Image 1 (cartoon, rainbow, N blue to C red):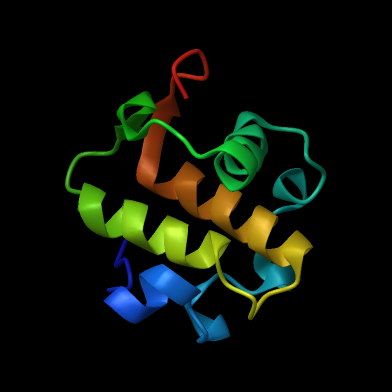
Image 2 (image 1 turned 90 degrees about the horizontal axis):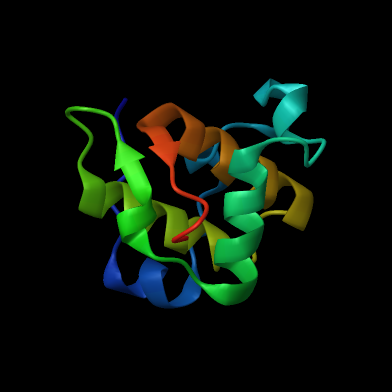
Length: 104
């Protein structure tokens, strides 16, 4: 999976290019219903921050790029909140094998 590169400005103020996140209509329903662990991860990260050591990234994933992209999406005002939550949860499910919720 190609992960978009995020600039320093986008890290500070969020991404503006809404095409970088999976379109809301293309995200599986399980990520829209707040019913899986990835949605809990996104909610925790959004409100409290997270421990990046909790993530078990898939082989070949550029971890730094994935974390930067996630943060830039979560701080963005370009998306409706529902799209942001579902899209980031879906993204994390694609780049991670697992997450340790106990140390998140």
